[in-house]
Image (cartoon, rainbow, N blue to C red; front, side, top):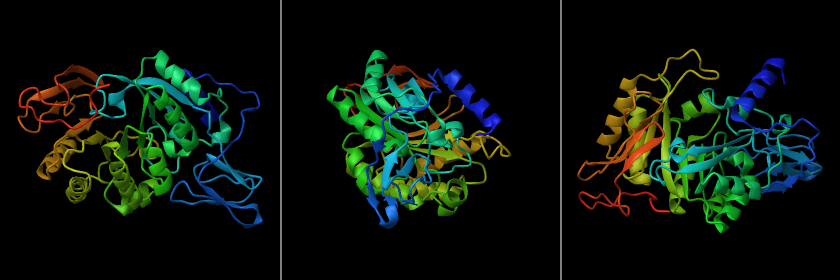
Length: 364
C-alpha cells in the first residue's frame, strides 16, 4: 500500500469510528463455501461467475478468498471494516420497515471493478491489507440489539465477498428475531444465492445498466448474471428493490432505460420499487458531471410510461421523488426528507384512503 493510500485508509476508518488494530492477525481461518479441489493443489472458487482457479498462495479477483495449502479460505470472515446503524432508507429500501434503523456492515474486497464506486477505499482493498478487530456473528447481533435495529444490512461493499460471514450472521440473527437485508450488485452464482435467500428478508440490487457493453467497460461484470440473480431472489420470496445509478452519457439513454423498465415489469412485476440515483464524480470518473435533474426526471417519466408503480429519485438535495404514493388513488402515503420518514399513513399494508394493498414489508 502506498503512503497516500495508507493515509486515506486511516482517515476513512477514523471518521467511521472503526477500531483499528495493527498487531499480527491471529484471527482463526475460515474455510470458504462453494469451491472444489483441482490437480496440483489448485482450487476453483464456485461462489461468483468468475470461477477463479487459484494456485497455492494465490487470491481471487475479489482479493477476499485465497488458496492456502490446497484449500480455499475466506480472508474476510469476522473482519468488518465498516459498522454503522443507518436508516434503512439509506440501503435504499423504501418498502421495508420505514423509519427504522438497520445495523450495517461491510468487509474489504469486491468482485467488480466499478469505475464509479463510491466506497472504493474499502471495496478495492486487499482483505489481507486490513487488520481490524475480529468480531464473531454474535457480536454483530448484539450490536444490532444495542442499537435497537430490527434488521442487519450487508452493504457498502459487495456482500458476496464475505458470504460465509454474512450467512452465519443471518442464520443466528433470525433465531433472535432480527432479520437480514442486503445491498448487492448481484454478481453471484445460483446455488449460493438460493442458499443465502433462505435467510434474507429483502435485497436492493444494483441493476447498473441494461447493456453488457456498459457492464464490460465500467464494471467488469455481467448483465446476464444480475438479471438472473433478480429472478432468483423473486422466486425465493425475497422482497426486491432495484437501484439504477444514472451516469451521464454512459447508461442513461432513453432506449436502455425503457428496456430496463420493461424487463422489470415483465420479470419482477410492476410493483417492484426502482430507485434512480444521481451520479457524482467519483473514483475513476471524476471527469464527468453530476447527473442532471432533467435526466432523473426523464427516467421517472419513462418508468411510469412502462407501468412501474413505485419510482424514486435518490441522492439529490432537492428532495424530489422520495415519497411513496398510492398507485390507485395517488394519495401521499409516506413522506420522506432525505433518509428520514416524516409521516407514514400505511395501515396494515394498505392505503387508508382507498384500501389498495401496498406491497412491501410493513409490520415488525
